[in-house]
Length: 254
Length: 245
Image (cartoon, rainbow over all chains, first blue to last red; front, side):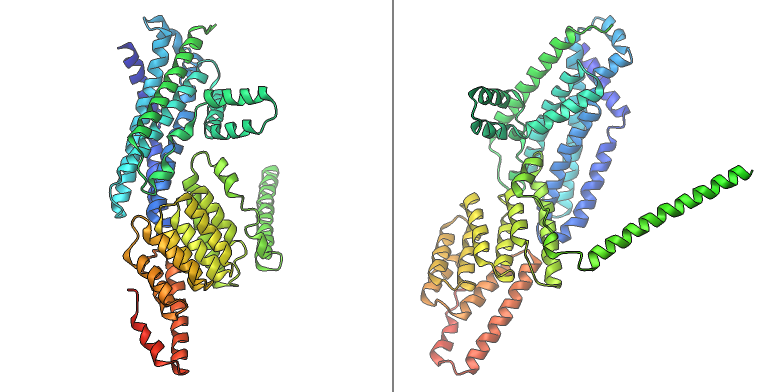
């Protein structure tokens, strides 16, 4: 119950921070790009609409995490509101979980509205409703959840600016994890190979959630892939949250 | 009073100076674009490799491929209207297809431009082979291979082989097997080439491909008329009925 109260408050905070403006920008980007680019694309207008729509969901979602998520915990410490919250019967673990769930709620709202806008744009451009786009949108949401958990982790022990830098670095590296393994194979030292392999498993593999390239060509995403990627994402996010809770519970605010 | 007037004058002069600098910059830019300073090969010289862009696109490969596709269309359209030289077309289509290996229209259009307009049919075939490696079940790419072998290289045996491969792939329309049989019977005939171009024109959503097909069909029909008026044997003229469609 206390967790829900914190989550609700975080969600309200997101609304107060004009996070929903992202949706207006998204709609404008989508409609304008569809109108401008489709006639130039020589028959590939629908593909471009889906590509831009799905990329924009990922981009604006990530932007929301960088702007909002990275300051989730630190802002409370900075404004000293953390003392008021923790003076009440709220454990630090509950606080972290509540913050994460509130941000997740805001992301659900954003992703859902953006997906509906994308589907409406496809309907208007006579491409029809596309279930595959929903699957890609769902996996993008799971990717955003993983990134939120990482943002909360960094926010639990560092400043907003540093958290933003660290989170964005993880986002970049998360799309390169496959390359780390390829890189390791070319290294002469066994030790560095082991280090690379360790990083390959420890860092989030965000490419697992990337099925955008498949769905724009009408290639189905199997239920196994969908479930496996979701399980991986949820487990990773849970792990990162647990780590945040541990770090945050050891933190001294003086 | 004097001081504030002097300050205003300085501000006006600074604004004028700034505008002058911007205007000079525009003039330099115009000189680069309009004169010999702009070298044709420079146009896409710094267009990065597909592998590099793929690695830096942070999971947005398909969208970046769309941007490269739009750039490729602009590049082709510009040169089609001006010098008809397509030095970088192979590179740009390679980038598009490396970023999005399932982008069938990019392989098809790129191969047609390379083989028909750039005069590099083997590069066109290489692009299609790359497409077939990534999309082994796609009949369009195999059909396009047969098309280039037949129409451009006049290698009828290879053309027949690829039409035959295409006809066995899922979703292949009937005419692929008809062309496979027809090429064996009537290799080298202009009517077959016209029918092939008709198929390409009918199935392509790409305006440039349709225009290219119409141009080539007009050329081939003129060739056919010339042959007919030059006293081609009756037997051969009669064979026009053997259309695969």
